[in-house]
Image (tube, rainbow, N blue to C red; front, side, top):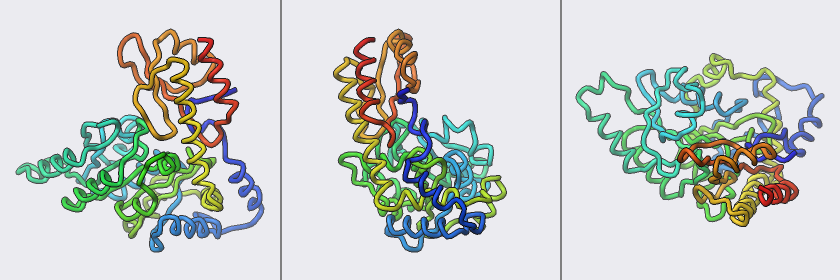
Length: 343
């Protein structure tokens, strides 16, 4: 069976699974204080060129976003996000369930505009009735965005400058960060994120791990962050589970290779779509490709290949997401080509 439904349909990259097996019977301290987690932290600090970073491991993206935002925000503050931001539309209100109101701004191919961000912050903080309102406290971005698009270095620097001007914290959701870092032409890397962000996370679940995300606080975590993790039911007794996986991901360039494979296969998939007269909804450089199909062709396709529904631009068409990953093989692409040719 081939699938382009998402980038986590398979389990773990074989090298990650092998490391889990190698370490399985070695007793370790719990709760993330094990030797493997410490080793992973050192490797991530080196990759970020940030030797003083605090790094914590959580098991999934929604959990990570909710816990990190709850820890960064004061009780009277909210988080600014694009109207298509993952925390706003695809996390079932999880951050808001922990008291983190989302303040949505218009999206531009999935991204926030620095000028609009500045205008919102200035308007809210200068309002004479601000004590009756939700203060802006954190700016949330994802890289890649929900539409597979990427921020540039200049855009991130502009957004970071707005955050510094108004005392906001900048947080980047990196669920698919491996694919963003390897996209052709990008000028964003881990050291840049460490320099500009107050917090970001390096995605594992969608990038070769069974589960797990690595939260990076380049300067320091909020006070009592471990208590936040525990209070919200996010602390694993077997913290080694995430630590071992990230140790493997950041050994011998594996994380980089995973990102490169996802991007390369996505670009080949884009070529197949064009050859089979399937128009792209927008041009994306990462591992997510969005195409427009008439509804009949979409119904015929999903009977044979799992793909992701995204939206209905009009009553007769469907925007479909094709996601590639480390496990997307040449055979996957060849089979998709044959299926599209027959539709």
